[in-house]
Length: 363
Length: 203
Ligand SMILES: Nc1nc2c(ncn2[C@@H]2O[C@H](COP(=O)(O)OP(=O)(O)OP(=O)(O)O)[C@@H](O)[C@H]2O)c(=O)[nH]1
Ligand SMILES: [Mg+2]
Image (cartoon, chains in turn cyan, green):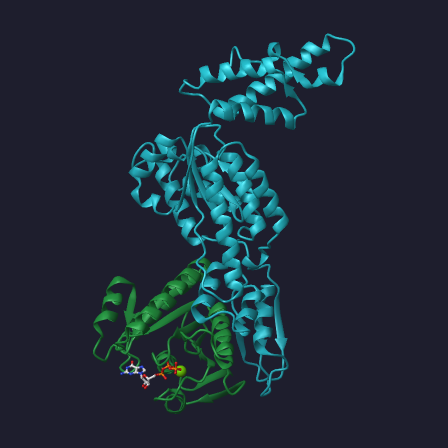
C-alpha cells in the first residue's frame, strides 16, 4: 500500500464530466492507483480507496454492450479473482486441437478413452456453435478420475488432453502439473493447505494430475491428506473453469478411496478406466516406440518379447507400457554396445535390434 | 481514513431510505451527495427530510441512478468519512435494455470500488421469484467479496413489517442482520458490524 503512488487529481466540477465516468473509473481501477479527487470546493472524496484486483475491461465492455445480464455479470466478477486466469485470454486454436486429437487417436488400444474424449470434444465444439447462436450451453465439468495400473497411458492421455483443451479454448495454458501425495501433504497444521494451494496455483490454466490420489485418503480422519482433499475440492468449485483436476491411481485403490469419500465421486463426472494392455497391444507399443526412435525389432526379437510379456503379465506389479519402454531403452543401449565392437556398419544393422539385444532377463 | 459501503439489492428493497437514514443516524445533518446515471451527473446537499421526500421511491420505477452520500465523522474513529453508495436496483431481465445496462455498469463499478458490500433483502416480500434472485445475487456477491477481501453483509430490510416466512427461513440459515430503516431498529448492530469488522479488514 505504502508504495502505491498517490495522485491528487483536480478537476472543476461541471454538470457533464470531461470524460465518461465509467471509462474514467475503471481506468483508474485498472492502474491500481489510489486515487483521490479534489472537488473545486477543496473537499476530498475517494473514488477508489484500495487497490482491488482489477476487473478487466472486457467485462465492463460486455456489460455495456448488453452481453451479460445482472447475474452473469456478478458471477463473472466473482470469477475474476486475484491471480486467476482471465477468461478472455482463452483462445481457440483448431490446429493445436486437431494435432492433439490425432496423436490421441494414434495411441495403441484405449478404445474407451478415445471415445469419451471424442464425445467431450464434440460437446465443446457444438457448445461453441450453440453459444454463437445465443443458445443455452452448460459448461461441462471436466474434472476426471483415471483408474488403471501404472503404464496404462494415464499421464500420456492427460498431457494430450491438456493440449486438446487448450486448442479447444477450454484451458488457457493446457500444461500438466504432475503431483503426488508428498507434493500436497505437509507436516504440520496449515502446511498442507499451503502446499496444496501452491500446486493449484501452478496448475491454473492447465491440468493438475494427482498420481496415486488414493494415498490422500490413507491414514483416516486425522491425516493431513484429508485437508489436501478439502482444499482441492474447494478449488474445484471456486476455480471451476480455470483448471482441471485429474485424480489417478490403481483401479482397486481408487474405488476404495471414492467409497470412503462419497461426496467426491459425484464431483468427477468423467471417470475413465484404463485397462491393462493385451500382449498384442504391448507388442504394438514396443514397435511404435522403436520406430519413433528410428529402430526396429527383428522378428526373433519380437517373438522373444512376446513370450516374455505373456509371462510377466501374470505378475502383480506388472507395469504395462512403462515396462516395454524400459526394456526397449535398455535394449537400445545393448545394441549400441554390441555394434561398437564392430567396424563397418550398414544402415540396416544400425536400426535392427536383435533377440540377443533384448533386455528381458532381469527386468 | 475513508470507508465506502455499497448498498445493493433488488428494486424497492429500501436502499435509498436506508442510506439517508443511516447517514442521519451516523450524525449527518446535511447530506452531500454526488450522483451519476439516469438524468446524468450531478451533486448537491439536502437535509435528510428533503432527501427522503425527493429520493425515496414511492411507487415509481427505479431510475438507474447511483448516488454516493458522504458522511463526515469528525470525532469518530477509525474513519473520518464514510461513503454510502446507493446503487441502482439489480434486475433480473436478460438482456437488459440500454438504460439498465449503464445502471448495472455503474452499480458493479460502485461495488468494485467499495470496501464493504451490503446486500439488502426485503423481508416483507412474498414473491418466490424474487427470493430466488436475491439468493443468487447473494451467492455471487459473497463469492466476489471473499476473493477480493471485502466485507459482505446481508441486511433484511423492513423488519417493522410482517416478515414473510420464506425470507425468514433464509434469515435463519444465513448471517443476516434485521433492520428497519423506518424505525432504525438494528442500526447500532449494523454499525458495529461494519465499523468493527471493516477496521480489521483495513489492517
Ligand atoms: N415499512 C418500511 N418501509 C420501508 C422501509 N425501507 C423502505 N421502505 C419503503 O419501501 C419503498 C422503497 O424504498 P426505497 O428506499 O426507495 O427503495 P430503493 O431500494 O431505493 O428502491 P429503488 O431505488 O427503486 O430500487 C418506499 O416506499 C419506502 O418508504 C422500512 O424499513 N420499513
Ligand atoms: Mg433508490
